[in-house]
Length: 336
Image (cartoon, rainbow, N blue to C red; front, side, top):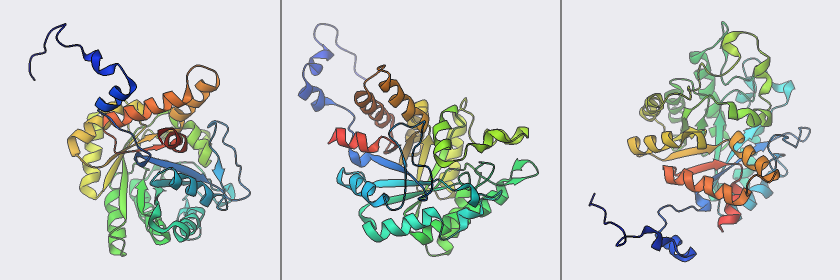
């Protein structure tokens, strides 16, 4: 780096004088094509409102095409589906995840029949929406069993690929699941189906609204110490090097792209992963991060629209290629 010239020869604020000038020299860009819209889906009898996420609803399959049409018209290239499973269909092993006619599979067939490849569809691979205990894997001897969970997750992935998923996104954080999923997809003719691994997914207190949205909040009712939380398989938020290790493992097992979650709490992790691996890197602007923007704005503490764009620009600046955000429609409208 060349030595800096001293005042008054250099005044960096000259480049900040006007809107057009700041736009001209801006280092970071943001487009609707950087956004992924997560959508919660439900059966007609399911609850529509999500009390902890203002502005976000659970959609029926009947309503879904109009929402996707709106996203397309705003330039958003992909959506991600998350089901709200009726309690009657939940079991201890999450068997509904393997049902070829489950809510996600029906949504996939509907949307692919309607939109084809005009929009990408990403599906979540984890068992928490389908289990009575709310965990992402299956329980054996009062622990989440890695081996048994991976077997089911691979079958779940294949079930979603059969229904038309473009990108399989395992969010469960079981070790080795990417390899098993990649093997299952390849052996069954889905070698072009992508895997977006939630490689660095931290155990955080900011997931609460999401768990309400998918009906997986029952985890707090379990009594055994190993089952009261997800800290035995999701990452410790005090760790950085572990995130790099997790990401390296998933890439070596066949992940095409990786996810950091939560987004705002992990700008340093996003930057380090992008710099280290140079692979497509996504960030999830999670439910708690979205909710505090909305609720703070409702109480006059900040300007929602300006704050939202600032958040998204900062995530892009950190190195993200794409951002999952419940505010994708709002952001795309503001950008355009």
